[in-house]
Length: 153
Image (cartoon, rainbow, N blue to C red):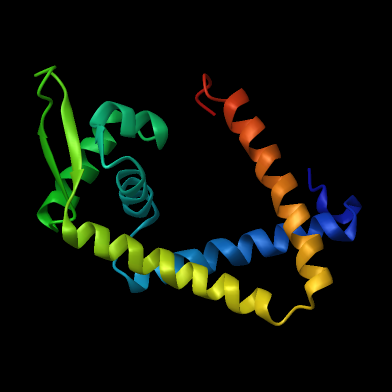
C-alpha cells in the first residue's frame, strides 16, 4: 500500500530528500573507495579506537560471518587490523590503521562540506529553525534506536 499520495507534502518532501541523501552519500563514499558497511565500521573505529569484532557486528546489525568477511577485505586494503583479544583469546579486537582513518575522515569531511555549503546560503533565522528540527529529529532517532536495541529490526 502506497501512503505517499495521502501524505502531507512535508512528508513526501522528507522521503524525496532521504532518497537523494542516500544517493549522494553513496557517491561520496564511492569516490573515497568505501562502501556503506566499510564506512560504518571505520566510523565506529574512529569513535572508539578499538572494538571487539562481535560488538562491531552488533552495533552495525551485520551478521558475524558477514562481518568476518568484511574485516578480511578491509585488512587486505590496510584499513584496519584484527588481533586476538588480550583478555579473551576466543575473541578478536579491531584496530583502525592510518590508511583507514585517513580514508574515513576524507569521506566525513566531504559530507560535512556539502552540508555546510547548503546551510551557508540560508538566512540566520532559517538556520535556527533547521537547527531546532535537527535537534528534535536526532532525539527522536535516539529514542527509536534505544527502543529497538534488543530487536533484530
